[in-house]
Length: 353
Image (cartoon, rainbow, N blue to C red; front, side, top):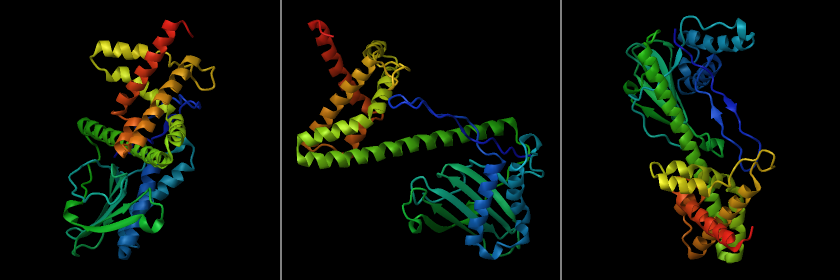
């Protein structure tokens, strides 16, 4: 029997505090009868759209029964549900041998629908966000016709429905998926799990990068507009952006000692420098008073740098990304931390609190 996998779900959504919301942890595992059945149902919709003459073909009857079976199972108590007998017509498939054109959209959901005239097989592939891949065999229909295949790219970020889909023809010989044996070896299962995890990690990394770029573009627009009005308004906008960036600053500050790697001296210095940024659950912000002051000082230093760049006309997208976070952003934060430590050192020498 093919293993359908387990459903993915969020097991910890983070703490509801502004400056330190905690981490979101995902439980590994993808699939589940209900999820695979949903993909099968969507695939049937695309098959009907691209190959309308086959949508009522009796060869599809077994495939159509799978979504119905899964739907009925969901109505039963968990302890009464049974696995799908006869194997699954859809399976996780991270085989990269299929030669497909580049996606038409960022994060495109892709569906491949094809017909192999040599044996009459109707088949398909589904790639959510172009990464999480499944394959399926609809069934064997009349053979001897001209082989063909199509890829449908769907843009999940499209603002308008009419611009959300693109279809192009493919070489059917390069897209047909091979169904795996019913009982895979432990080595094969382990390899598939690793490939699945790599795909999930890659997707999460790209989503994080997309969010960073989106924030950077918004901040760039605000700062560019404010810079034309003069330093005063630019500083106001900078403070607003920095207020939204407190969490990024905190995350970067906590990450700096780790990034120091084998440089023990630098790691120790950075660790001592960020010591005031500690958790305090009783505070509404989740930070100690000293931590809040440290964070505010870093945000202020960052705002000053943003104004300086804005007035100098050097506030480009890359620079904005550096200011808001990411790997290169730690250099900007270190500068803010150094500025804060110098001022704190001056207070200590003056005897002030």
